[in-house]
Length: 253
Ligand code: 6PG
Picture 1 (spheres, helix red, strand yellow):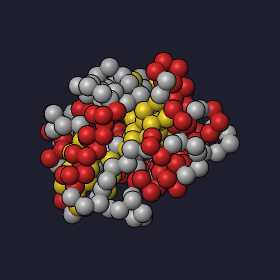
Picture 2: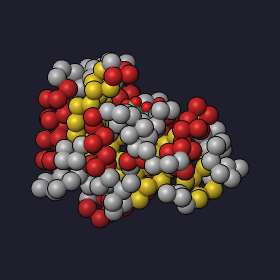
Picture 3: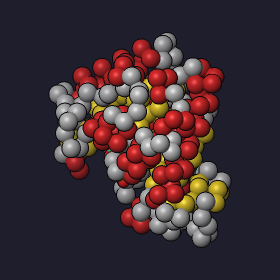
């Protein structure tokens, strides 16, 4: 499902609403809410909204468990850290217990960090064959990557692991990321894509030929969960009949 919004602010509000709705539903059913946060810049506004008076009192933060879709291999206080971004915009502003924040330890050996994070996930999703996050938030790069699943990288083919260290040559760096298979077991996946710079790639991902090696975001197809693309009008520019605002259209693929 693709929902188009007039601008990035309306997109962020819609994402915050989805977060609250998913949290309330999950807590109502299981007494807890597990969410994997996206990194980058688009989610910043979403997290700030969630921490604002308009949203933060709509959910029980003591029942929220925060995970991360991916992390850069830097210390938690590094400007590039997704954890740092989430802490500054959200985690330091709401009453989520520290024990409920499951950080990916990016600094140090990436493979060890990936293993430790997967161990933490397996402890949380006790005995499950795959993690079933109540919600996974994702962004999409202008190269079609999502989380740290970059084009033509080793992680794309991973079938067994929930988390891997992924060498990203173009960044000349390792990243730690959930695998596509782990993401695809989520109950709900929401992409947030804003800006004209994403328009061409978004159209390819959603309506172009299937080529997940080149367009990893195409790997994300929840097996038994929902998938929604929240996009602003600028990013939707190259989509068919992209003249609507807040219109919901079924995804072709
Ligand atoms: C990261 C993110 C990454 C991000 C995309 C889009 O660690 O950077 O996980 O997958 O979602 O690069 O980033 P923007 O939202 O900043 O465009």
